[in-house]
Length: 407
Image 1 (cartoon, rainbow, N blue to C red):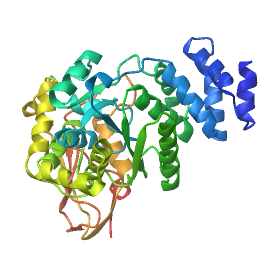
Image 2 (image 1 turned 90 degrees about the vertical axis):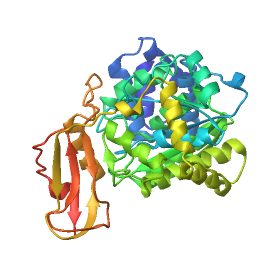
Image 3 (image 1 turned 60 degrees about the horizontal axis):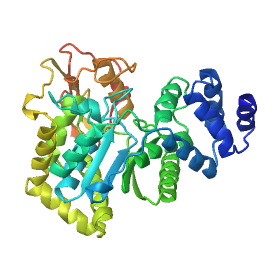
C-alpha cells in the first residue's frame, strides 16, 4: 500500500486525502519508515502537489497536534511569518511596533539551523529572557503588555516537527508545497486571526527565484482563505543581508537602533511595511493610515519602550547584551562603488564564526557576527573599513571578491 502511494506520486498523479493520511499519519505513528517517507518527499519535490493535495496535507498537519484558541482574550490576534534570510531581525522590530498601536500579537518563533540563528536564538542572546512559555503564560503576557514572542509549543503540528527533521537531511526543504504546508499549518494551529507573510527571495533566502517566491506567497494565502483567515504578503529581496548587523546579539542591537528611530534603510522600510499591514488588518483601516501610526510610535519612542516592556516581562535585560571583544577590520581593496554584498557568503562567514548551527544540537555563540559599515551603491576608498568581524581578531577573508564587489 505505502509503496503504491509513493509510486503514484512518482508518476505525477494526485494523491487522495486518504492516501496522504495513510503515509503521513503512519509516519507519525512509526508505521512508515524514514526511507519510505524520504522517497515520498522526494517524489513531491520533483512532481509537486495540486492545490487540493496541499489543502488536505495542511489539515493533516494541523490535526496532528494541539490547536490553540485565544478567543477568551476578546481581541483580534495577528501573527507574522518570515521565510527567513541573512540578517532577518524583523520580528524583534515589528512585534513591539504593532503592539504599541493596540494590536495583540502572539508570535511563535523557531531556532535557526544554518547560517544564522533564528528569532529565538537572537532573543536568547538577551540574558535571562524566557522563550519557553506555557499557554497560560502566553495568555497572561498578551493581556499585560499586548504581545509575546515565544518558542513554538511542543504539542503544535507534531507531524511538521518530524517531517521537517527528515526534509532537512534529504534535500527536500525547498519544495514550495511542503514549505507552504509547514508554515501555514503552524500559523493556523497557533490560533492567529490575521496572518502577515514576509516571503524572501535571493541567494540569502530559502527561495532563490522571485517567481517561485510569488507562487509560495499566493499558495499560502489560498491556504489561509480555506480557514477563513485574512492573509497578506510582501516579497522582499534577500540577495543582500537585511540591515547592517549579522549575528545574534548584534542583530538585537540593530533592532534596538531601528526602534529608537536611529536607523533608516531597507530593514526599516520592510518592517514599516509589515507592521502597517498588520495594523491595517487588525483595525480595518487603510495601510497608509496605519503607516502614519507606525511612524509616530517610532518617532516618539513608544515603540522602543514597548520592546523593553516585552523583554522585561519575559525576564530579559538588554543592558546585559554582550558582543565579542575580538574584532577584525575588513578593508576595501580599491576605490570605487560597492556593487555587491553577497548575503549567502556573509551568512557562511557568520556560521564559521559560530553564529549559526551546522547541526541542530550545536551551541550558538551569541556574541559573534559581522557588522557591515557600507551598503550596496555606497562609494568606498581603497583601504577604507567596509565590515567588522566580531569573534576573531585575526580573521582573514580569503574570498573577498565572492563577498564584496567594488566597481
